[in-house]
Image (cartoon, rainbow, N blue to C red; front, side):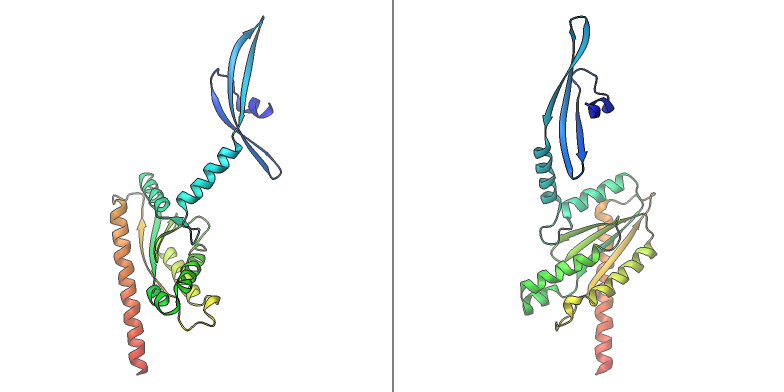
Length: 226
């Protein structure tokens, strides 16, 4: 009744959600009020329905709908919804598009378990970009990060750190292959006029340019040793 009073439930027929918390307990109630005359007084009847189980079921469905089953990062659906929302809100952010170098080689030569570990370990590092970054697995070996309120240079420096950390991942200590990722970035300002597909296309193009540069650098290094 204290919670109902705090919410000011007084309009007849009005329906509101109320959450009760005590310690680790959280319960959800749907409250509907009806006003009527009772003798010489005005009275109210509250119809209270416990919807806790339904709330938890909805949350579980949302987790399934918006998260990647392997990495537990957000999935493509959630990432695109967030991207569209941020563009509509004229939010300032950096979009990072990345994919894993040599995942097919790892799958073919060492098995799909090792390929899955590659994906999981890459996700682990990308998740550490920042606490407010939205990290998504777009599909296969591709990932997208949406990083709010950060400029291009700061985001690039962080991605270089993640690139180095991924190559030094502890899982690789007894492996005969390495981890590597290529990435492309687009800084989106409040005056942006591009749509989601245009931004993703630019990030994808820059990512492949980054991949070509890394391949060229590795070839030059091998040729130098020969």
